[in-house]
Length: 581
Image (cartoon, rainbow, N blue to C red):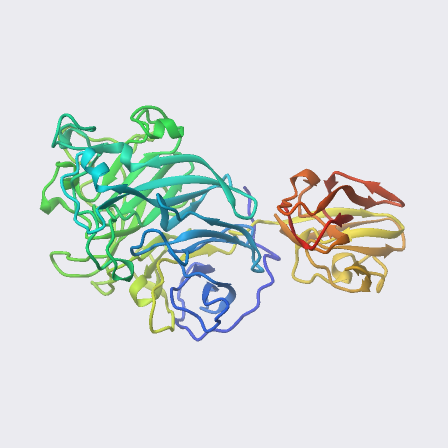
């Protein structure tokens, strides 16, 4: 998609900041998004998500009722998707979540999805996909008996459980619903060398595409999230998606590895060892960090000492397609300090990864390493992302620090969240042209009265700015009775008079959805920046009375399409909310 500098991205107001930051030298201009785990002072919405400008000022704030599980994601339409914690999760360890919310710029919740039940509990990360779906990481509960039947020798927790991992692709449906359209389970990809009568029996070193079910301990008797016993094994803490390769990457600090799997498979293929672009089903296409896990290395070959935040470098940035990650450095032999590293994977033009017989996956070492002379460290969470200008933005979770370095290792921007407790799991920075490009729509009006609406996000939604050819002081809304107004609200319809036939060009940021509060009876509404069939309006409460949507052009016209820039009458059976998207 072609993007240009946003003229009217958002109604941005500097909210002020008590945060500390260094004056930038050559940082990338953009917006930094993060969700600290520190509670705010608002008891009704005790947690917040912040959007900063390059000066370190808070330009927008989303208040939330649930604490973050990991980092939020900013979408091109200015909404966010954030993972957060449910009040009573069914499995508890660090990074527990259970709830995923899609929230507009103005705080309206478009989607509020729960994955917290007796079998699955979301934790840590999610990944919004280009098709509008979301990847969700979840623990998968198994009993010790089930684990023993798969070849596991020992369960090291008093719960007598084994929490495996699953990755779901969920297609949002309505406000709270979702359909799983693809799934992957590590339980389908074990290898064990204990018992030939049990599943997955083989020589560990001959199967780098599988994971040794007996590597590492399973959970602990305490010390997890809240100090409670847990049965966490892999502890996946980050997931990312590569659209070009149609592959998924995730990191595991317990194994000290990251893994890549094929997303082009069906769910059935993902449960096996064939199928997809790779021909390998759901097996690992590539892994790196600790070849001891698959018996092709020694202790001296271990590269990671707790890894977090693995991701592919974005298109357009130096190193595009390489892999970036944060090594916390816990129990690093030469001392506890963190590094941010860039790896060049041995991938060929078919998206397959080269490995020599009886050897570990290459390369031997990272391509780029930043440690600031061992000057930063966090034992938990943290991450890094490459920016379009070549800088790398780094989050040091434990110290609530976000800073940006250039390729020479010089720190060009430094920010510390002022709270004295909590963490910032990870932060991302978005370029100023990340948002959906400004669009221009033409709205044709007849002489006299017209039903109109605001089809795009603008900085000044006044009548005279949006429809300069209209007659001043002739704008009326309706909320059970008519009222005079001079300001448009997205999703609302209005009567407006014109002195003659007029074509009005309205420029602003595309509005992908409009959340409209309906009152019982007649309502004046408008749509979004694209034509919307009335059958596609999200109406979970069945408020819309059939065949009661009317447009106007000299007379009322029943319609089944909402056209951008126009207003419509709609009759509702009660009070409630609809979403036009």
